Amino acid sequence: MHLSREALEATLGGAELIHDAAAVEAAYDRMAAEIRERIGASDPLVLCVMMGGLVPTAKLIARFDFPYRLDYLHATRYRGATRGGELHWLAEPTTPLAGETVLVVDDIFDEGLTLRAIVEHCRTAGAAQVLTAVLVNKRHERKHGMRVDFVGLDVPDRYVFGEGMDYQGYLRGLGGIRAIDGGH
Ligand SMILES: O=P(O)(O)OC[C@H]1O[C@H](OP(=O)(O)OP(=O)(O)O)[C@H](O)[C@@H]1O
Ligand code: HPA
Image (cartoon, rainbow, N blue to C red; front, side, top):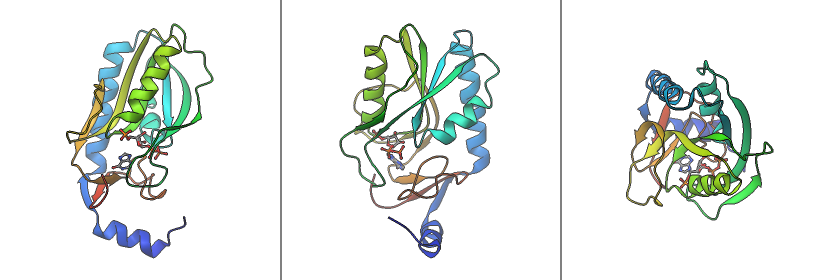
């Protein structure tokens, strides 16, 4: 669906800034340092979860000063909506995962179904170690039982966008994280 510039400006005007761009950049610095400490010597394979993981992955790898390789996968369960459904795999990683230390990078840990399925997929494919990194964790009690290894920032239980996260397919490149009411 197409949204007009006016509609997007109205959404932005009604949104609340939860974390400004400087807070987000500081969170990436901290996450990159934690990741280096834990797996910087393991030549990890970084797996970007398209589409939302695109911005956090780019921001993190720009900070990595150790050897790593990059691949992506595409799994989605929101597809432009503000409430999640069934997970659809659109692309699996092409790099063989057997024996790899894998770092899965996504934008948001919400109910956790997406990351849980991706971690299971990597383990089944023989990864030696699977770690996860998300820019934001949404605070609520509806998680599906997994722990994320590297988390940048917490956000409230509202629909958030910016830094890779979309509002109806738009606004992914916006710096900082904003919230609107409605949806989770
Ligand atoms: O923790 P969960 O409740 O499973 O939700 C988190 C997932 O939802 C979003 O993806 P989405 O399906 O919207 O696709 P997108 O990355 O293309 O926006 C986000 O990028 C995460 O991958
Ligand atoms: O709050 C959200 N914003 C954007 N994408 C999402 N995917 C799950 N939750 C969200």
